[in-house]
Length: 444
Image (tube, rainbow, N blue to C red; front, side):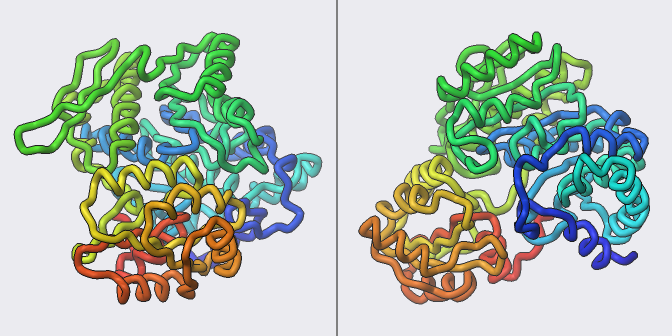
């Protein structure tokens, strides 16, 4: 099996991200299925310590910061995230090295008989999904490579997510907002209950401040499982420190030594909250026997890379890409653009996924824009440009169709002056195509 054949095999299963199975239903999720699959593989997830990260917003950035600090400390940590921007291998890495094509292909070939055996022995559990197969592959790869600590980002929710077969040393639940409502529920309480599914009996949970409705659920679940919840703003805190150079630095304090003057490589004030959450998680790891030197924490935040999140691709005009894909992230993006950049006009290049609340995204972003160019990504879940135009016009927003992402970006650049700002947003697959239009097709 070569790399292309391996990808075809993995993506041939029911895949939530690509909606390849029209009969897909959330009721087909089952943690027992993944448990039995991993048992057939020899429970590779037990070979390493885990930091488990769930949440609606900021979980990828927070996971990347924790991972980079561990890597800076020489821990050779693994990182498992989704989705990818350009290359499927981005999802599985050790340190800064993505899994090699030949390694992924060999492991996939090795998994095939175990997948077939699971389906034959337990037909009532249903067939594995793409994400479940990939999770088993990642665990097996990490174990074979002698990884001692892995940072694992949930794919969807938490309670029934394939990654939830680990017993994490520390669990992190980032900011919770409405997203994937057709699967996780249409209230903050319902979504919080799914995210809180990663809380383990006697565990240690790190969370930034949450909306009251979500916090009540987290506290209830932690009490029931006798887990300790360390909440931002209550048990640990963060603040900004102005410096002589006109910039601000981050300070984080809590039941640990206070950090002053932290530099965060990722732009936006919301990333300060993610960075503070990462620091609190790293300090919790220290308490549980996995020490990360202070200098490694500082350097990990200063040098972290997480492309596609308020990332500047060009100056004059400034071109920024950001994967905001719900109303909460769109609101944070609007605020960040105003805080981080100076510009004459704002031109939005907007694409979105069919399963998102597109009207809410437009409602948050469009009033700040002088013009909107809508685009349709080549991704199978991409919303048609006609629908985006109709939603813009229904909200009184002037917009025009720009074709695919590359064409829409080219149109925006034709209309922009040197002092203007172009922001490409709406989903990570839109961001990926914008980066590729600039010849950027890697994240490392």
